[in-house]
Amino acid sequence: LSELFQVNRSTVVTAMEELMSYGMLESEYGGGTRVASNTWSLFMSTPPDWNNYIHSSPFRSNMPTIQIINKLEYDERYVRLGTGELSPSLFPHDLMTKVFKKLPAKIPALGYLGPLGLPELRRSLTERMALKGIDVPDSSIVVTSGSLQGLQLISVCMLKPGSTVFTESPTYLKSLQVFQSAGMHLSGIPMDKNGLMYWQIGKETGQALLYTIPTHQNPTGLVMPEERRKELFQFCNANRLPVIEDDAYGDLWFDQEPPKPIKAMDQNGMILYLGTVSKTLAPGLRIGWLAGPESVVYRIGDVKMQVDYGASSLSQWALAEFFDSGYYDDYLIFLRQELKARRDLALSLLNQHFKDLADWSVPQGGFYIWLRFKIPLSMDNLFQRALDKNILLNPGNIYDFADNNALRLSYAYADPEDLCKAIKTLSHVVEACLKK
Ligand code: PMP
Image 1 (tube, rainbow, N blue to C red):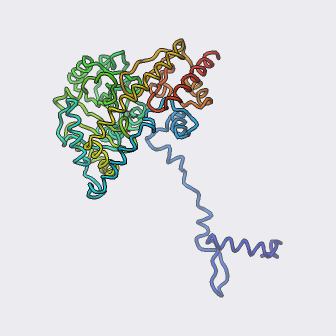
Image 2: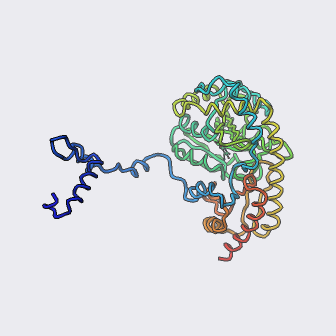
Image 3: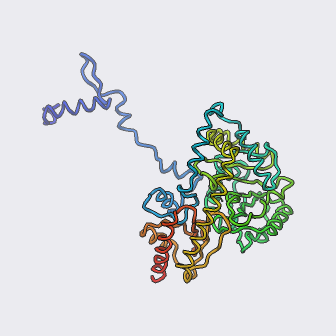
């Protein structure tokens, strides 16, 4: 070989050894060396066209802004002014430690659980919902891996693609994505100061459903007063329009308890009620629940067994213990006070720095202030310029694609010192955006 190709003999030996190590050459004692039988297939195989596979999924990619948010949320250089999550500094480490210490003695094992979830947890949830006027038996509750999964399961196992989902406009961003990816037709209904203007819901001939967040709405922070809840309920009843009521923030009120959930009026199973502990305790537990008519709950439980075989049993046991020990209620009292103090701080900072630039809502609970600029400005530009100052924003156009003039501010995540600095800096960023 070395003579034939005029290369150094040692180069040929090294090359052959290397090919041997790839399995491309094989040698037998006394039988010489030959090309391995599978070498051609190694040469010929090209990777699959993954792009083709990736883009044939019904799931759309996140908008670029959301992809950036998802990535930078874990970069500690940024102050997160829009994040819908409790600050790590509010996490109840001591209570969690106590709960987890008790678990090994309490739980039989960490096996799979039945389709509806841990009976002990469902019992506690029934009792807790009864305190809000929701009177349902344990058999009407299914535990989900977060309430977002509840939305997803409803979409994939209760609605035909092409069905209409009415939502508040703006609304919880991920709900929009879940419905869209399941092939639903979204119809945003505007809100006034009392929430969803239900009379603007059009007549639908096919399947339809309404998704609403009546208490401390995400992203506007609005609470729908009792009167509007009654009217909405009557409207949906009269039109046989099923409702998903998302109560993620219902426990996080400051001075006055909000009106009872709409589900409390429901005698004939028109409302699917979604709860979660993601906003009140820990999103990492990934525990939510759905309360509705048994037929729906069984359907969701059945499909959930096909999808993930149940929510984490460790999380379910831990949460059941958190409820039963009374720690959850103790923590809620602390949390409401903390969030209220943070809301007050955020409002005073806005009064100091944003008076001439924007108007905003005064939330009575939950995490969010909805800020609307007095002069329209490009959200993409603002988002980018804020990033340059190490501030991560949640611009309004991710909650309502047509709204290019609002911002969701959250006082739940950034700690007070960061909040003070970042809101001041943000006002300068906004001023700079308005100049250009
Ligand atoms: N609903 C609303 C209104 C929310 O804001 C959120 C979280 N941002 C969820 C549901 C999802 O919560 P989970 O972590 O339980 O899936």
